[in-house]
Amino acid sequence: MAAKFGGYRWLGYMIVVLTLVVIGIPALLVRGCSWESGEPIKKDGVQVKLQVSEKEIISLPLEQYLTGVVAAEMPVSFHEEALKAQAVAARTYALLRMVREEEDDQHPDAHLCADPSHCQAWISNEEMRKRWGWNYRPNYHKISSAVLATKGKVLTCEGQLIDPVYHSSCGGRGTEDAREVWGHEVPYLKSVACSYDAPEKQKPVNTQMSLQELFTKLGIREQAIAVAAGSDLMEIQERTESGRVKRVKVGSQTFSGVELRKRLGLRSTDFKVDCTGKKVIFSTRGYGHAVGMCQYGANGLAQRGANYDQILSHYYQGAKLKTVPEK
Ligand SMILES: [Zn+2]
Ligand SMILES: [Zn+2]
Image (cartoon, rainbow, N blue to C red; front, side):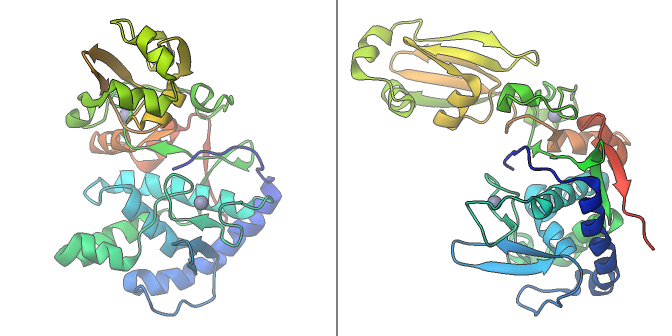
């Protein structure tokens, strides 16, 4: 999911919106998992306007949207408590987007889109059927149960909805401080320990590319190539406190680890690099920006007995889980 900051609304506004959530919940409970893609959706409760493709915007109840997000963002095999933690993070993010004042240039007529590089990933019931086949019903039930078990729960800090960014796997190194990735100090997005990712997620993954590809992607000029094509072509100059690459020199140019990851499409900024002949080999650990909740770590914590509240408290330190009071 993409990370954005600023434009938070005050608690009062939040309560108005969340009251709508509560009003909508009984209807969602009745409908439960019986809603199928393509069926008309009743215009009750909080409706999310979702840009599902370039030309299509659909409107669907918040909890139904969240089921599609959790299904897209986490493997259904994950522990129930990890799925619940994901549901709370997804709900908080969705409401944050809905109460913001500013319009979003990428989809001015929709609250959210289904693109994980911009908002949160989301899949339709039809897509779930394709992915899960015969296991569609039990899988759908597992995920919608996690969403409904956390109804009305959101994360707040000092009375405001937090920006609950999350990523796939920190690779076992622990999470990253938001400041290192986006340059903003965010009190609840500090680096925290995380050794809970599945063992296979903690192993390095190699990606190789030719020098020419490297230079093209980094926009390095031809003249620089001749100068740079020595054994010290790439030099990692600084690492963040969590151990990820903060600054790297390529030839005569310097890049931040975040910029290099973006331009080269690396899995994470936790990498080592080896230049051999005409190739560069990156050995990366983890996947994603590493800020906020580590999804594989959340599953590991759940398997060790943590509940979703404890999981969220670990990754968003200082944030509080709030339940909207029901009348
Ligand atoms: Zn979006
Ligand atoms: Zn982790």
